[in-house]
Amino acid sequence: MGKKDASATKLPVDQYRKQIGKQDYKKSKNVLKATRLKAEAKKNSSGFRDAFLVVAAILFFVLCVYAFFYLNLSTEINLDVDMD
Image 1 (tube, helix red, strand yellow):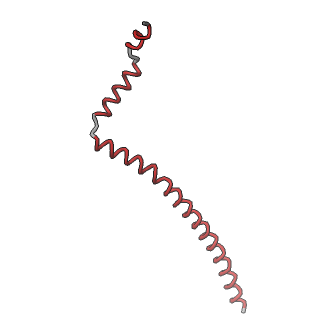
Image 2 (cartoon, helix red, strand yellow):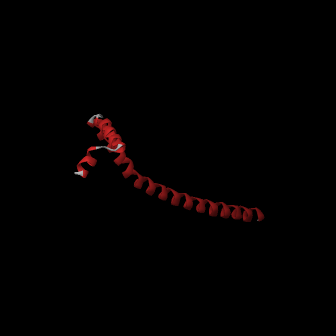
Image 3 (cartoon, helix red, strand yellow):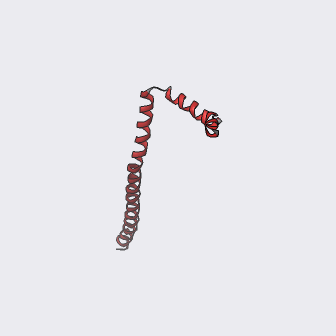
């Protein structure tokens, strides 16, 4: 008998959760669907963005190495030409 009496009283936390659930239910199905699709798109696109950033970083590094060697070799060649 004690359990039935205890379950009849609601905790304030449960009442608050129920109230939030009612407010969320008031939103139209289109809005809820759009929010869900937006969250899924954001979750799925992060993998593509990370892969793109890695490839861009590698290309930038290779370009820097190429530019470094190009500038060093071109200045040495110009010095050799001037000495003749």
